[in-house]
Image: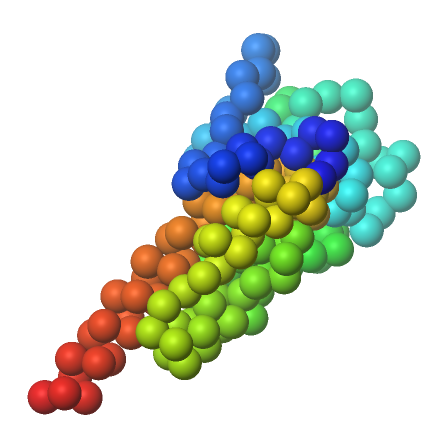
Length: 172
């Protein structure tokens, strides 16, 4: 596990929101509040020269309808998905092919496939085991800069609802 990875050893369902003093919380494109992102995450994600980064705080915009992924807290700099090494799950929550877990490479499609084939999902337990084994690096591999389990739980819950509805309609 990366030294700065903030996945709790026991797993989890929410993401941490570090406090930042003196910076704008709102994305300059959509005006939604963004979360503070560690510069290490930004450096790992960007395809550009790192000389483009400035000595300011950066934030992550989770809003799926917004094209901005990262922005400087002073609003002077924005990075879009095309500026990154990864496609961002938060920007494409309905795209089954986009990773929801970047460390262990799980997609909504793989989660749905397991659910359809076995009737259950082991993805949360599998990721939690990886976290406990020190194998996650969410702080640098996940564009949101922290643990994916909250997103994974949401994908599993949606898949279970869809699978249950599908079973009910075929039984009718």
